[in-house]
Image 1: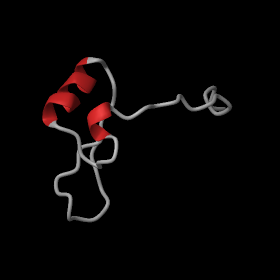
Image 2: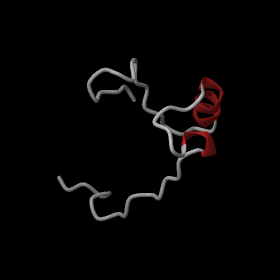
Image 3: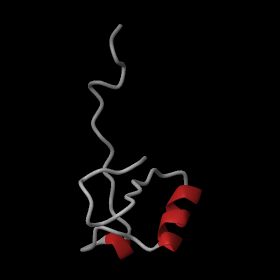
Image 4: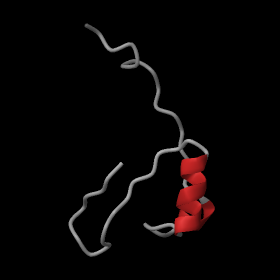
Length: 54
């Protein structure tokens, strides 16, 4: 079965203003993103390996 989204371009996603120049955003901004229906990546510790939860 083919994937109907395979040939679709990826949406352009702009980082929130508070996240520009930083890898981490304030929790208030993250909550606003979630309320708006957008996905966020949650990392448990800045000093750990590159992993996150969607």
